Length: 362
Image 1 (cartoon, helix red, strand yellow):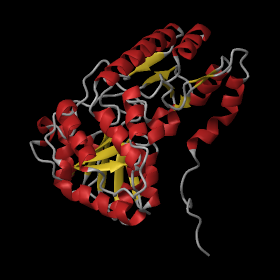
Image 2 (spheres, one colour):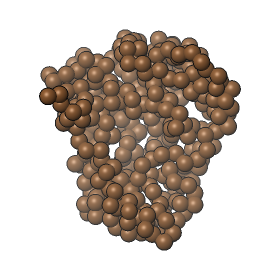
Image 3 (cartoon, one colour):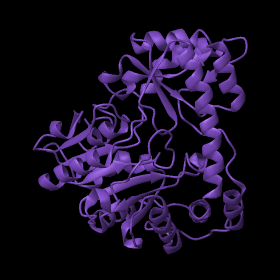
Image 4 (tube, helix red, strand yellow):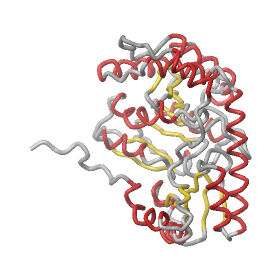
């Protein structure tokens, strides 16, 4: 008998807080959903216009994407990441989660392979390993990465904690990956949203010594451009690894629609809307940071990204339920690993009105 596709995979984590969600929705003034970090502000008009202008798209796109889109990613990486790329270093993605889930399969990992993921991390890093039939281990520092590792995930700024790794920390992980001759894959989807620290990319020569060998960084337009509904991201880095990604995408028909490609070009070529949106998030962050602090929560890390990592020194589900009784829904920290069981993750992606409502309830 064939095994079901999801055999051996964990339950989808958001199902665990369904009951708390119902409690929060029963609040007389409605729920303030600070759990899933989905953008709520309008997609910038410059992006919408590009989508409309290229809506007539009768033919099939290619897996590798338009040269203009790959060049736009190169130009953006030069401005934002201090990285010197050409289009052979770029693979557009149908949202960054696609690659996070499928990369171990793309790389041919299997039952004899081990994927190293941060101790507190986006659950799909581990799920991707399990989808490939591989194993995963967690690490707190570079010294915890075992010698039998086949691939290393890095995430800075971190989801869920908002921690920003220093250049020295990144250099150490790159060196470890190169010692083991395995890919180092850095999820940098929040790299443009630094608050108390300036994020740095593994593609920066100060980290990698001027060589992209063995390195990939994963990026998304979802948060910086309110583009989550378009599904647009990219993998950047080692040309050989990029070629492997593109090869699988050809076979699997993972093709970014032409209108979305043109919208993505517009998003990447316009930095002004990113500054506007970042100012909006900064204001929401200030309100929530102050409100949670005054309500007796301790906020740790949270140096960048769209989340606050907070604790009341109790089990995370107790905190989730306490907040749900006030109509506020957050994510339990243990979604991201056992080390998060005393924390909750608070998203800043509600409207100004809902953020103000959360502050008032606290």
